[in-house]
Image (cartoon, rainbow, N blue to C red; front, side, top):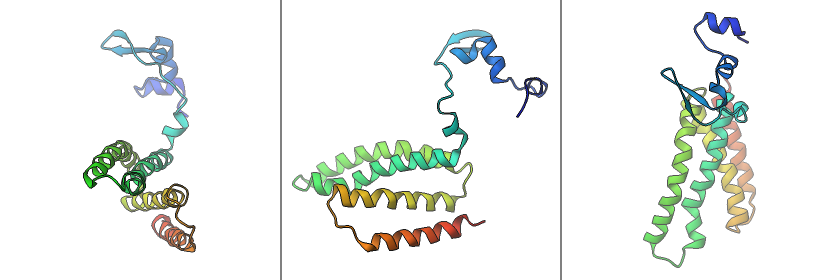
Length: 161
């Protein structure tokens, strides 16, 4: 941990120093002028300190949107023209991309491209199975277990070293 004196020696300002100057409680330094901004929060600190975790959480929510965009129209818009289903799906997909793009950028800071892809595929399967069974009313199949075991093999080989 960098102490207060060490941070100053290296030209960095500690959070404690910013708090003393009022910057950590809602004041932002703007070229010598103090401006009101959103207060700094530490509530997301554990989340942001672990980029792989942040990536996984964002990809999970992203996959929820994408699964509904891809397959939800089969249940909800079966009697509508295809273009209505496409417009609704594209709208849902926009929300998915607003989560997926930052997730991949965050994840790529600590994961390889292959690791990022396999993590996304595992999350996709983990989101799809409950969606298929609970929302779409599909029967539970042993094939889902075999697919999950194959994915775990992929995780092993991609993340092993």
